[in-house]
Image 1 (tube, rainbow, N blue to C red):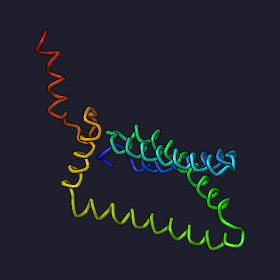
Image 2 (image 1 turned 120 degrees about the vertical axis):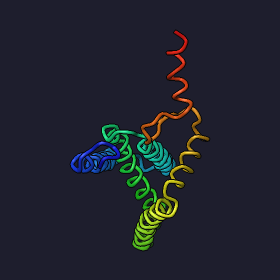
Image 3 (image 1 turned 60 degrees about the vertical axis):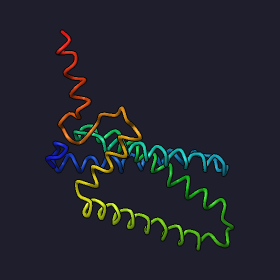
Length: 168
């Protein structure tokens, strides 16, 4: 709980904000058109938003900044769930829908378990080096982004902070 300066209750509220977002996204998705192209577009957009929000949440340095990205990610997850389920339902013949839902459930559960295990393995085996590699990738993709979970300034940020002081 010291990493992001929050209590156990504050971390619980982070999960609650994601859950609230999921409910909001699912309820508002009931208004989506059943047109397959629009469902596919909504699903694609929701997946992009989730990725951006989770990426943003990974860069925050204080727990207070965690709530908004996870609330928005939750909304996008709700939209993605409804869009994907509706898209699969609309595209599957009625006689095969039971099998489709069984297969879809198995795929989703497998993906959740697999991604959790893979993430844990990467962080356990790689440790700080894995975090450094992930930060290096982030640095190549977003070279001007100076956010880091490490409270110490990066050398380039430190240089930019000192320049105004030495010019005056």
